[in-house]
Image (cartoon, rainbow over all chains, first blue to last red):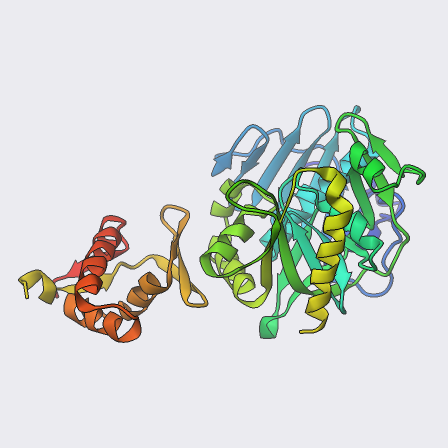
Length: 318
Length: 94
């Protein structure tokens, strides 16, 4: 048994409360720069604790170099940074190593940690940046390096403001409505993207030299749940697929969604795989999914953002 | 007509199907994989909710899709072979 360092009889526990990605969070430490939630919270908020974690999981059903997982336990190890233990759908325990700075730590907790607890609660975690559009939102999905944050940053200048970056946690609801909760309004941009977007004059909130990326915080907006209107899966053009925006349907749409999940495919086999499968199918049926294929040339990002902005505008006419 | 055409084909249990418009995806719970079915394969899978003979399946396909009987029989035979090999269906001997 271990005791949290705050857990004494004399001192009441101070917990910081947030609403992010459609989840209620209670953390032992404040999330830098984020305003705490007011009012009533979810009856079972996710607890983020900072304490010792187990070094391994007994008899894991899945493991690779960074993750061990069993039916309700997950252990993520990021060498030199932190170990994160997720128990069920409401407890994240973080053991931070001395070398891990706060920005990296919160990126990992709010990315991998909330993805997995959201998944445990029946949400579908997509690797996507999300922008607000027409009283709803639109996801720009794709694995690392496909330009999600760069496109989201560029779309901001066309009036589509950021809803969430890097994680789109989709909540299947009644009547074919799929809601997405807002995240921290910050973008992690590659240094060359900063130049192309002409953001060099802006002061980054933090830098991550080893990647290298800069973190930009945008003007705070109320964090809300918005219905998902569309998903654009990002891809680069090849000989067989010229640049363009293509509608995907049926099996191809579902396959594309699976390719954009923000979790290791092996983890899908643990826990609620049937529920996830059915949710993915429902999203594939009910939400318009497109493949946005653009050239590798980053200097064309502005032109492609403009084209995407015009395409997103058509969902306002639907 | 051969005796094989009179035997009954039936779905194996343990699969979860999800409709994707005309197409279909099937989750294989035992192998943690999923299989995508195009519109014609999905139609056959839906018919196999009840055991069906080759002839019954073929007649339904000809009615549903723009295909002649000969080509339908050939393609249906390939599809059923594939489904049998993948363990998705079985021959039901009653």
